Length: 428
Image (tube, rainbow, N blue to C red):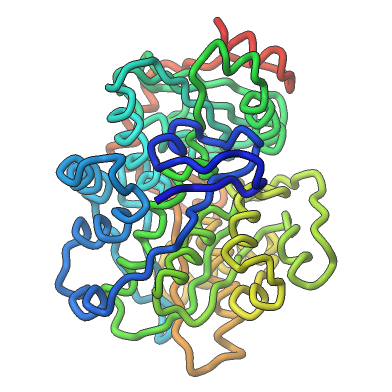
């Protein structure tokens, strides 16, 4: 399997090189030259397979010969060795809970897979610097996944004051190979600085730089696993998936799985006030604005990097895209009201991102009464205590794996929105 750049100006590379590069030299994103088609035998036996077996069969065509089968099976087993349950909320709405991993967020799967792949490749020789921007959960998952990995240094940029206290504990209490940069700006500022670093040829001649955002194929591709696990557990076929969408990597992975024959009826990109894609799908053009801070802060992205992959998956055919994907904009007031109503009616605690996806799905199902829907509950509610506890009227118990972090000292370096300052830190 080879991967080409979405900008079409860099040579195609294999999985190993795409993972190490992170972003293509022409600043495009890597995309598979062919999309594997899973055989009929896979679907006939899927209910009887383990998560590890499903994940290996899904990812193997993309990895090719870059990692030996035995090693890839070990990596996959460590990636998905926690529960990912499908929980029924109402007659036609189900929650796929992706928050049972070590950092209580869906990004654990991608971060664990990528860290183990990069650790494997780093063993070939040469130190690797992983540079990543986060709006909340990515950084914690990356810090956890790479903590102590030999030959890999991790530098995480996060927007000061715009992540929850639990997210900040996870970002700033990692091991000696994890460095957190607290940026006096928003996520889009962090992401622009990271992109500038990857396009700086002088910097990249000095250090071996790669990314752990979902722009990296080793972070993006394993996110397909959730969708297969959901169908394995469901008693129905061809569901509607409602996906909390910020940088659009998660829903992009779902669409990739769909192109590999995953039986899905429709996808909903559930967005908050950062509604660039909903406006695009309404025919208003692609016009990002300054990102808006919301209570679903991990989705506070106005210019999503992975949307170019979605366009590639649809062959840049807007009509095809609109027939398969719709998008909804959910306000903070609607998010809070949804959290309250779902807790009152069903006793189920939503985090703000899950609430955005729940309401978008509920609206869709009102218009499509014969369909069943699954929304992705992407983070544990404890990561967003201010909004969740106000809904419950009581404090949320903090899981042990997180509570132990609050007593550790915070290690971060405050920096302005300045690429030159970031470059100084990277070269130090």
